[in-house]
Amino acid sequence: MSALDRDEAEIEQSRAPLMDHLIELRGRLVWCVVAFLLAFILCFYFAAQLQVELIKPFQAAAAVHAAAAAKGQHGNPLDLLAITAGLKPFPPGGLAAVELIATAPLEQLFTKMKIAGFGAIVLAFPILAYQLYAFVAPGLYRNEKGAFLPFLLATPVMFCLGGALVYFVMLPFVMLFSLSQQISSEGITVLLTTKISDYLNLVTSLILAFGLCFQLPVVTTLLGMAGIISSKVMAEGRRYAIVAVVVLAAIVTPPDPISQLMLAVPLVLLYEISIWCVRIIELRRKTTDAAA
Image (tube, rainbow, N blue to C red):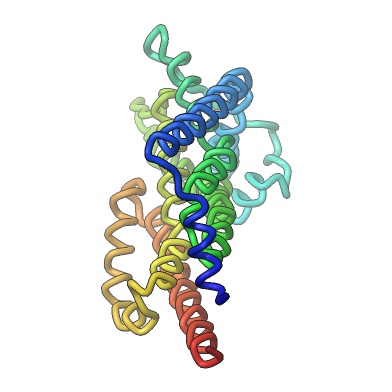
């Protein structure tokens, strides 16, 4: 019996009436809801600590900006990156005081709930992904199972890489740029007084945008395995892809060129990596066909 016949036999054995599939789906959805609720409760319990950690890039930018303003200079980007990553102490004078405000009675509560919900999705993703895989796996061939599982593992890794780029690189630069727009001249002062909800909405939006954009190699590799796209088509459409990347960066990032470059440059590199991933898949497919 060939491998294809064995796969088809396994799929036939896994066939079940529609009601059985619906019952299984209900059970797996229950597991997903329970995992999300438990993760939500855990994240909400530590919501204050999570807020402090998310504000630290703002604090690093404020410290660098204050130290540079005292010397009549601009903030050093390398110092900002090193302080945010914890590789360098804060400038002389200690930690910078960062004050964020809440203008509504329940604004802080709703902000904590948003953080808890966002953190719960990230924290519960392995369980959610496993339940998805366990539900569709009986209908997949053996080679499809082997291809599907690695992508479930690669997805959170790429998302974390995008989030790390936001936290350690992009967010400090965005806040340093925002602080540099303050005005203090001839009795007129314009200070950056940020609402806690607005700041954390910016943080979560950037992390979500970068995390999803960093799924580009995963998506293109899947499309390449399915034969929907080829490395030749991707290479020929490189110029159009670069234009699309620039437009996307302009839409999802704050309106400053530094933020847009911080998203556009990694995306262009990821697009090139995607071309090579699809090319490797095509070479392996040719080798397998030749051996068959």
